[in-house]
Image 1 (cartoon, rainbow, N blue to C red):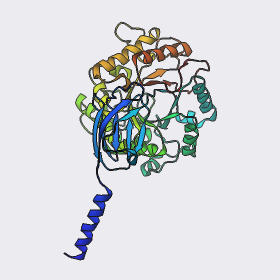
Image 2: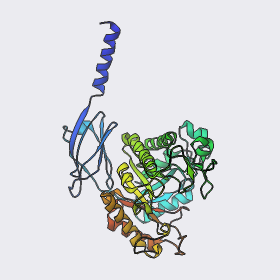
Image 3: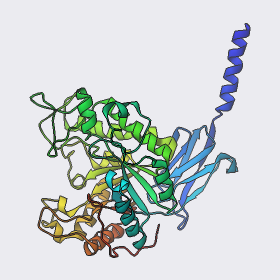
Image 4: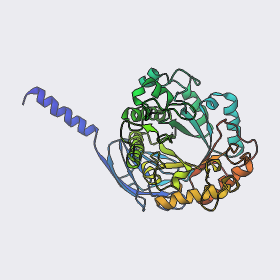
Length: 420
């Protein structure tokens, strides 16, 4: 055999040895109760599996670290060398997310950020949702992405050293969630009009805020948002939360493919599944925000969101259960702002009944802003407590409060212990 061929065989041998497949099988259980955890994600390298109803898994892959995560539990990473053999029974500790939201401007403002951190401390919260790509499409900190530079997404830098900010927040033991607005992207649609949603007459569609959207069928749009998600996962965020992961709520949109209930659902679910696979090596939780009515509607709400397929595609689903958003109420409760508890509890119950998933797979967005639909006044401490009670009574894996101005009550609305 020629020397060149011998070298090639030797190279293959070294490559196979360095990428030796490992196999693990075992059970993932609750560290407190000993109960099996269904749908826990076990990852080795780029391979991952979900546990079955008995908490069992079997996984083959290559890598130095076995990574685990599950909705309602703290993540774990275990070096392969620490595992005695291929049978790996592992426990996860319960953890519920209890957080507030900060916009790109709220994150950059020392006052708004410090006020939010004070509220978090006073109320024993443990999480912060931070815009990394907000409603207008710009990314407010330096990130190495050519397309972001090209479309002007980096023209407004509000946080010069995001890594330092994350480190300071981690020192406060905060669980950090990166919110990425996906298909509402004025900058991308303006810079690359071939990706924009168009009106039936051919012009570019704009929503009520005069902002453009991008076509959810286009893979280039998928790739851009997934690349952003990977960048922030590398920075140390604990969770990636995809918002506006839907078609615009208009019947007048024109897309690169025919828009039907099936095609829309496949596009949205397909994006989430693709993002989930791309993010699997990072062991970050992956979440999707959905309209509150999605848990009730049997169609795709004309936006590509169906509760069953989306629940199967991500770790956590976050329905936006703002009473002010239920303009028609729900069965038996036609004035939602006067029925805050039932709106939250019954919607979560409906989601669980329709999917058969664990209540821990759901973590709702709750209302901390003034009612705009029913003249129902502010949603401050009292109504915030009612919403928390509804989510907790249901058994959700936590909750998050939304206020677009990032101004939260100064009083006590949660007396729960951090992380429990």
